Amino acid sequence: MSSTPGKNYLNEKSGLWSWLTTLDHKRIGIMYMISVLSFFFIGGVFAMLMRLELFAPGALFEGNTYNQMMTYHGTIMTFMVIIPGVPAFIGNFVLPLLLGAKDVAFPRVNLMSWYCLMVGAAISFLTLFFGGVDTGWTFYTPYSIQTNGTVLMVLGAFVMGFSSILTGLNFIVTVHKLRAPGMDFFKMPLMVWALYSTAIIQVLATPVLAITLLLLASEKLLGVGVFDPALGGDPVLFQHFFWFYSHPAVYIMILPAMGIISELLTTFSKKTIFGYRAIAFSSVGIAAVSFFVWGHHMFVSGQSELAGVIFSFITMLVGVPTAIKTFNWVATLYKGSIEFRSPMLYALGFIFLFTIGGVTGIILATLATDVHFHDTYFVVAHFHYVMVGGTLMAITGGIFYWFPKMFGKMYSEFWAQMSFLFVFSGFNITFFPQFILGATGMPRRYHQYLPEFTSLNQISSIGSWTIGIGFLIALGVIIHGLLKGEKAPKNPWGGLTLEWTADSPPIHENFETTPVVTAGPYEYGR
Image (cartoon, rainbow, N blue to C red; front, top):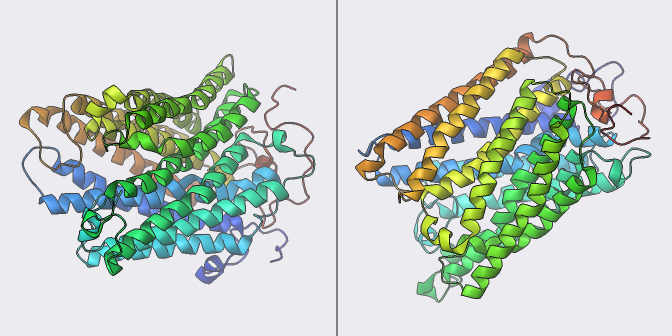
């Protein structure tokens, strides 16, 4: 596709069809953005309804209705928001720009990956018209085999898995083959290292989930005995297969978020990032270790004591490369010229919340304590501190950071900061009480609870609505910026990576001339 002189990628061709058939990575990234934010809104509505039910012990909804809301909230947020959120949405837009490339390696495959996500999501949403699904987002057997709607839901997840695999393959080839002249692996931005490590997990782990879901559907439709004990199967085998994918999937969600944080911290502290190679190698290290920790989800499943000890040790080992990143981020801030712009606030919020998630992860990786906290609200709080406090904070910070580059417009900095205050405070009000609820024995996945848990649940529900207000403010900031924002300069933040040398918004082929790299991406003051 040839570019039109003087026109940016937004104005090249108008009309819906030109977008639906585009091969431009930037337009595909924007389509991912619209899709992911729409799914986030739907998943958030389910979360608000759940917290409304949990505001008091009296039943507002029936148990089956609550279970369905929990299932759709978890499925949408996991498979349609957090997993595609950074790699497919932000990664699609910025990866070629960060590399000095014109596009990704396989533009048609890139477009196909978006269609896979949309088709898979549509199939999953069809279950709403066929009685719904109430299994939870993990689809645990044998219950999932016995309920209606499961086949359609897992078929949707199966198709969405192809989106993840295709994106991962595209990014790996793009990183290897399309770097700008002079850019070796140790001159790549850390965001690229994060996306590259994530792509490896996507390609290697996602097929395991696909096979697992295919076996589940086969058992439901054909009566093949794999997981159902009544057919001679083993339900614990499903957990092994599912978590072999789903724990690496945690790092599909969090690794690219960590890449965003590295970009934000160095740009808004105007300082060369501390320990570049350590952060880069830690991304690869996290990706490698992630394949060997699935068993910590199964400490109470009856696995051997030796397996439990080994999985406990390896799970704690993941904390080493994660701690390396956190230490280097803090060291980067030390004596930096810090600007507290809204992307930086979200980055600092990420560090605070993700650290709490990491520390509580060590508690859950310890055999003696996990036995007591397993299936309590302590696990819910830990998971959300990592995923929501981590990934969604980074996604929001990344949107505000690259918004001027995406759309050539600036946004209201005051209201962007207000959105952070609501999201950050609301998040802690929501989930910190859940640590206490879990430690005192409240089980997760129940819509009824004992009266003594009422006050903490009410605090948690109020916090969730505060988060909702914060994200609505952020959406308002984005819409206002699109409609009435001032024209953005090429480099509003003073960043040194290649995307800031392109126009805002970029032309179709990103750069007027191919950039040549002669220095590292963060060499402030040199």
